[in-house]
Figure 1: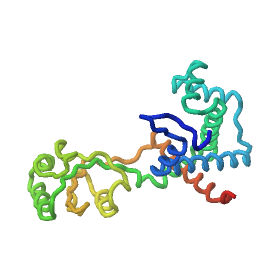
Figure 2: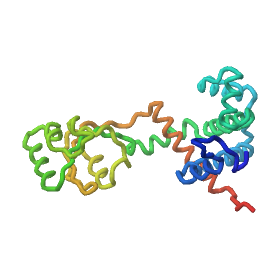
Figure 3: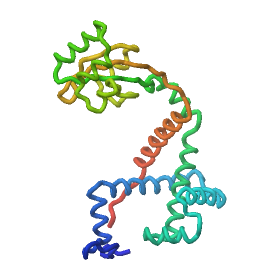
Figure 4: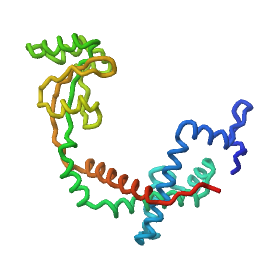
Length: 252
């Protein structure tokens, strides 16, 4: 496909391949795609180094699963999909093989023990807080509301009456569940050291002032979702190191 090839004509105006590339570059999607391709190439090289390969049966099962998920069960459906997207079936198989190889490499370099060791070491940083918040126009108002809570008034009622946050005000200021690195460092340090029902602040956030109530503190549990999250993080770190150790050259 040439850069000047026309993909579609809209109201008499031709949309060319070049136009699509310019759009992808301007929106940052093109760079992301290049990064994914770099990851694919690096994983393929590493797979060769460790003798990791795909069997025909493995690929058949994976490709069949992808086609079922995309509802491309019939050969005619697959052909139409490829035609519509301007690719061949070989192109589709190539991408599917890269995805499967990435999954197998992840399973090889990140073992169950690695996940458990990481969890044991970082467990305290993975606990979550359930928070409610009142956003105020200035520090004086925030301090006044905090004092009123200390005097026995209901935090959630005050949030419904006074909070400037339209997204949480109706719910009594309920912000939801947060983890470390979801808040500013200063706020995080105080809140993650607090106890249930503590009211903390005021904090200066985006030119407004907030007070927080700690509704619940939940210690991290190594469930399947967290295992996957840790494994993804460990594989991402491994992949970053592998990319950093790769040789890159400018095209001639």
